[in-house]
Image 1 (cartoon, rainbow, N blue to C red):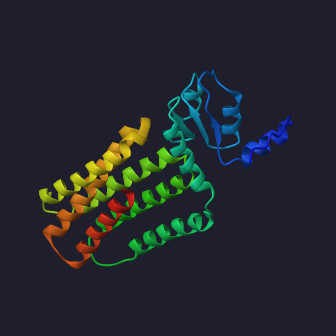
Image 2 (cartoon, one colour):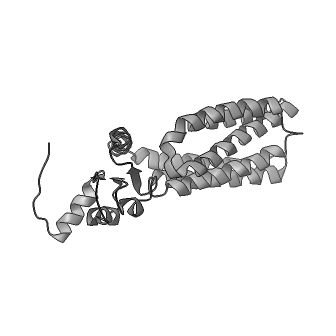
Image 3 (tube, one colour):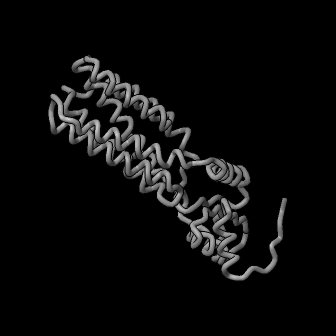
Length: 239
């Protein structure tokens, strides 16, 4: 149902913005509407058309989404994504995801045989992944920061896995690149101005999987098989 609230004083207006799942601006002609600034000040996600100054008020993919004027399909897609998140209870996720990653970090820090440099490199990657998880839980405001944290984590993993590989196993690289190309095709149309970041992220995942496969190819023991399986699961989950 639609409710017309009438005139609201400033405190009531701030409360309504804060309660909202999303603020939608579908204008065809607009300058820089106050409603968008007020919604953003209340930390509420905004979906707006790219009319006038609206496109400059919202950071697409970070503080909300900017859609082309008249593109009802994209507008519905963005709203569906936001409302699906809003209606879920994320309390357990907010607790369990960071706790799980912290446990992984502590497990990796346990003393044991092997190259300590490799172990501490993996720990650095896990810490970056933890930061990425926390940032993505604050989406869309910290989405780009989360993407950057995971990108750096993948680069760290590549460096760690490279220590275990004799050289790059080209069949694995080609197969991972094929999967990466499919992922890029699926995500490209909806990535907007984040396309360069998404492309760099997918390239890093592809190289991470290829490096893990190369490490396993150099010495096919159970530990390196587990490493490869973990890299593949990361690729699948992100895809």
